[in-house]
Figure 1 (cartoon, rainbow, N blue to C red):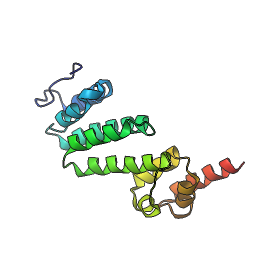
Figure 2: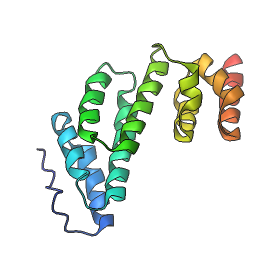
Figure 3: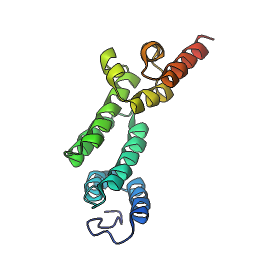
Figure 4: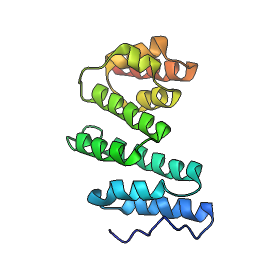
Length: 157
């Protein structure tokens, strides 16, 4: 499987394993990605394992955001994540970012109810005037409202 190690028997300290997991996740073949994520999530240090996997999810989702392969990747990863509530939620938020990015249907209330992470990511990633207007007026934090308003102002020029 592209040389990734069996993470079921961690030998190194959590910092070394975290770094190794990030390298393995960055280098894994697409067909082995879900299996590797499942393997990482079996690490006894669940917080560290989830942190490595969420970094990977964020990197891959950003790469695939407008790619037609996103749907297949989402399905594979959501199956791999199982009952990991935080990770499943993050993956679902990426699907909302994708919907907005590709002009698929989305609901304003979903955008406003999304996490602080999501709203910060949205103002950095999205170009949708409707989404940015909503975040500029009703974003949860002043930072989100300011960045969204700045993007809208720059686009009007």
